[in-house]
Image (cartoon, rainbow over all chains, first blue to last red; front, side, top):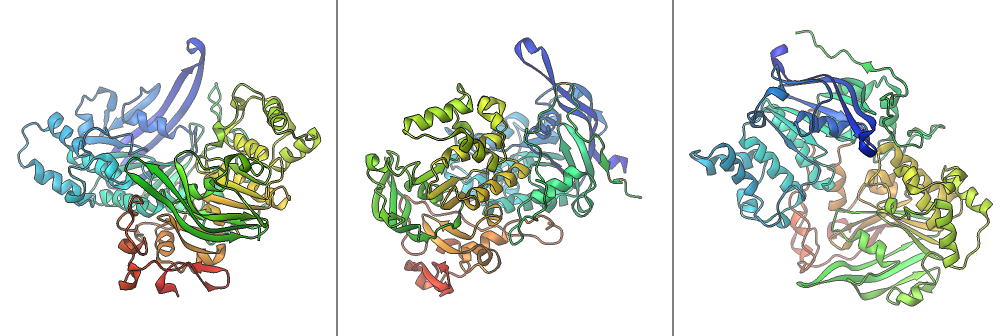
Length: 295
Length: 314
């Protein structure tokens, strides 16, 4: 079991200094722990302010960790050099701002060659293979400028870029939220395909139905803390934490109207704001399903 | 019939030519009807919403008429439209959370707005309306920065409907919100109609599952034209247009798992509206396309209140 774990977060916290001269502290993430294994999609679900993007940024080392450790393959990621990015890559929300509009979009692939494989033989075959993996037709995307491609094509091109590096873990932060419904599902299917190839995928999203569609395990975050985690089917069918239940009840479904329960199921009016002392969690308790299967 | 739109065409002027964002739409909205207007980016849904209240300088009215409560709405006449805007037709804009003046307390801003329109409103009435959308009168003494996204959204809803417009256009009002806040805001829209503050409503959205929760009817747009309009349940359970069907079957509903059922997207991409091909605009992506699709199908009533623009649905 243990050697299957790609990424492990152990009591990870992030404190931002805010206010004039950084006088106040804001705990964006507190004591978060979970794992991503080989060949597994884990969805990290949370509303705005839940700290899910901060976690993704910490995993990608784009921001520092205030407390706790993040280990990749058993090694603390802060001690790994540039080789870390050979194995772990991220794709973000806005495909349109990830590309430089002056250059053809496939420049992101060429840059990988220049940075990591300057003398690679058979590069164009590798590009063709990576594009095929993300179900893009090379003739339709190579040499095109970003504005000539759709959001879904651009997102898939970024995933192809990550695949060129033979990555083992992909951090996908809200990668479908700017895509149209008709192309969103193709990108989700792609994540499931990556899983079949043995990659670990951390799928960060605010949308529970998208999370349930692709993931094997789900971690629900609220105000920087994990409120519930476990196998996706279990969380979806038998959510234990009231917050998760509310979240599930709020997801709009076509063909089924929201149940007319008396109390508003939403949060109280203030958006979830992480309090200065980090005690944002109203209920405090964490529902954790048994996640360790017996081998 | 509260709103009747006939063959409305609005194009965008660009240096490369005219983008036919709205290319001949004909539909009506009944009194008290909440119509969901769904479509993907570039379908013309926002253009339609905006055309009913204000054409900006890039938009050119090419043809067609808009009638509200039996009166012709002078959509092309900016000056005469002033009599309609806010009074008869109001809009909750897409980025309404940034529509509030950050330097004014909410109460003062509302006061200034009313004064500029020469309207008086009792404070008690304002408070009643705030209560209707689930806000306390306390927000009047607060600055926008002190309110959450959902609260700001609801303040704008109250402001937009102060004069009981007979038509309210809500443009993507829930798209930037979390699911639980979305639900509260969507219910607020319903409350505005049920409370008699608004006549009928057009709720523009890309999220068909969300609008289904509150809409009486749903109209689907594709490539600057209407694809389908029907009662919400009919769209959800028995859509007739191939595009609506493909769109709905590509939605991962809560509970559907990839391992059990692999959903399919719609191959291809929407047509460029700069110089769209003749005939049905969905033709290139449509699994049912045949020779006749080279000719534009009419938006015809195939069942009571169920309109579809597809040769195969007739």
